[in-house]
Length: 479
Image (cartoon, rainbow, N blue to C red; front, side, top):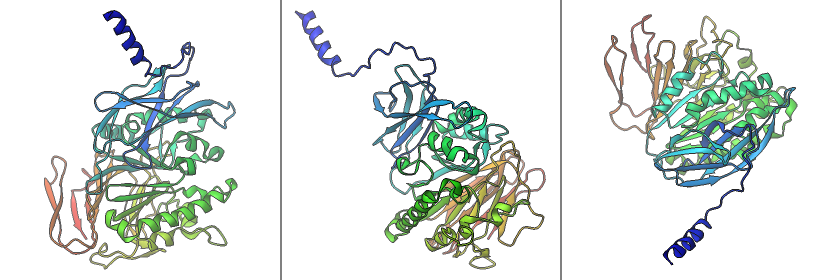
């Protein structure tokens, strides 16, 4: 009798579990690879994306806190590259909804045919009052990727809450019938599978109407714009991603350019509402091609359509939106170098004063960070910088970013060849009312020891910390 009761209970319990039909396991290329994650519509939603080369007939992610006791299922679609071989692959997407904030999860992705290795990620804290940490860069290829190992190492040590890759991947994802794209996605997996990898398209993604980019990445509101433009809130920051390439590849039509422009007006207007600005005072936009640069070959900047609008009619000009809606910082890439401007609008510097240029600035600050490393090497500069250029470097590197809170954001350019910060600066808004310790920064051995940087004014200002190690001594400049 006891044996009979046990059998009945086991049968009832097992009936609750949905086992897939026996597939026969005849699937030669069903092992998941190229795993990466991104935020969904909220920062406690994660979208897991990966690739197989045969149809697995299912897309599953098993996940949980310390034990993979949860499972989510998603969708897959067949992507055919536009190259001569018309290579096919299956792109899988699974949403992990309603995750706990500030919580570490482990997961693997796959199907009955096979699972990926085990990965972990940590969801951001809830609300706005916490320090957001990001790595920001563009123009990283699968060859000569100087910054990649440093980024992988930092990501695995938990140094970042989000990564922004500002266009140009792999050089190029469609090269060699998209085999280069596959290899690049494998290369970034050590960081992109553990930190939300947020992207925008660059000119090197344009082949076959950006098909490799649109299919391989899964940004917020993917169903609407296929990762070409979107925004998301994290901590005290509202990030906005756009496609500058709509302005240059008009053969693909004006519809998406028009939709992006109208969407951007609505998005920035909403972000700039007083109640939203009180919650998230920092508005930061990123796109691939810069509006300004002082590189020796700066033809793109001199005809920048995003700044001036389309030729002849000036339609869809973006620069007025940046100023009108109070965008604080604009991040670009494309030029294989690092450059930061003074507050800038319409080729004119809008500093608060000569003595304190970042006190009550009248325009956004522009940053170009396109020197992560690719086979095209870095770009040089004109001998004499224009008056609006505050700092520039041709060394390989990437940008570290911290939004400390609703009163301070911090940028640091890392020189990976020197293995040290090259330039740091801090932006402080107008409502700082008293002297406050912002951060301590420890310099390398043999240099000056520790600098404590203080905010002492009811204003917006910047701090630069410059080092070329053996070439010059560290210098501290406070503006």
